[in-house]
Length: 186
Image 1 (cartoon, one colour):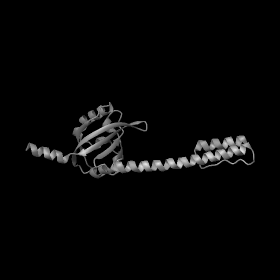
Image 2 (cartoon, one colour):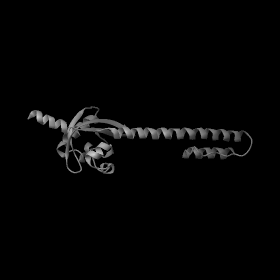
Image 3 (cartoon, one colour):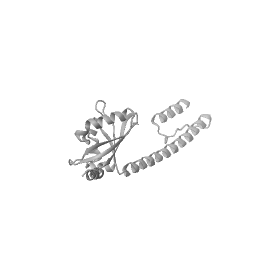
Image 4 (cartoon, helix red, strand yellow):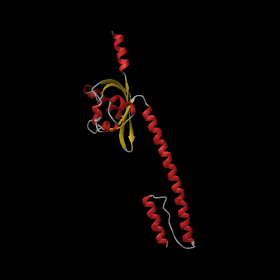
């Protein structure tokens, strides 16, 4: 009976199914132990459900904040050799709308596809500095799906995403600012 109880507890632990219970017939210390194990499993199940609810709420809040940002926001995993070659992991609603690409389409292209080719060297150098621990801003130009060029000011931060380096790129459309600057010069 003790081996059966031990085996069942190990099985429950290995699959982390805290809704499972152990059954040991009788009226002795082993039955009391099984009852206590079941009580503990019940508490673990409640705790797991509570954590899942909190996790879902946290994810919902993250999505709300992320998609409420007016600036274009993308998360990329920088490429090993060429930082601009890294894939786009995440994009907010503003990026999807302004760039004219769906989230799945953005996930299939490297970050370099967004940056105008003439800006690749400057942006790549800036991203390498961010990866080395420096921060700041750089002006660049994004290319939309229909070929329209949008001048942007990029603010980039490096962070650890589940053990993998990632870059958070926030790009503000500066079309109006550039137009005002041109008017001042004229």
